Length: 361
Image (cartoon, rainbow, N blue to C red):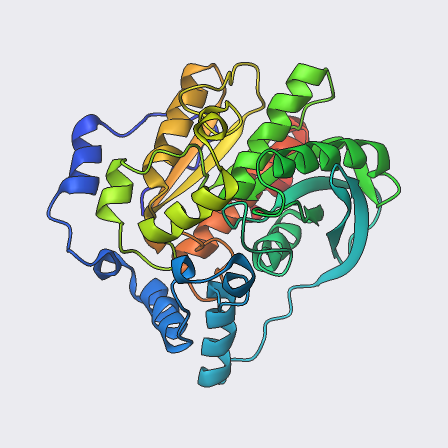
């Protein structure tokens, strides 16, 4: 599991390394490359028998079991007690562009004062998922950073296709700038974070803040980001039959969320080929080996770097899309969560104080 533990360590893998990773002597079954603990969760998901989403309607697909369900099922079957994380959560609403939408606040129970804030966007390809699906990752960040995490829901396709989710994401950031103090947060210490499609939204917030002259987030954490609609990349080929996310499922989601070529070429979607990423906050980019989105995540980290953005790129072997948040069972997920939390703490805490607390993770 190679990863960078320095915020400014941005050395990209060589072309030879990338070719070997993607097209070398890889097993035909992508999951044969999974670490044992990741494979255990995937096998439990198989036991729950999810149907291929491409055979379902969006409403049916949203009811299918997820990795979070598999983790709970595995713990119950093995008799593993739930771990207290010391985080309290309660639901609110916020004024999204599409109307009032749910949000969930996560706050360490023993925390006091105005806390640093992470605005968190769940994944789901702009079609699936919701606050419950992002719960584990959001909780982990609240517990590990000691800060307030605000996880927001947003418009989903096909009822509200592109750019509805992006409009909601920008509205959520403006709301948080105005209301952070009332929510128990510090409006001068806000970061953004997301998984998959949510990572795309987190980056969009940074671009919108730049273009609108708003106070920028202190950092952006982009976990297994969706950074385009090109389904012919190396990782789409080698992970075409991966689980829980495969090429067919991504094609189904993109068809619902991005109904025409204009949407797919829009700079809010095509982050690598069309977006202007100059002047954005420092970024943490997390990619996973067994993920169709891995190639675009690596390319996004490089595009950010070439645009003058400080990047900490972390590439995790042996894990799948959706691994973030599985830290109680999957070692590399726990390492990823700790590393992202450390980057956020670096952004939140002045340099002269970080040395005293930053290495506690």
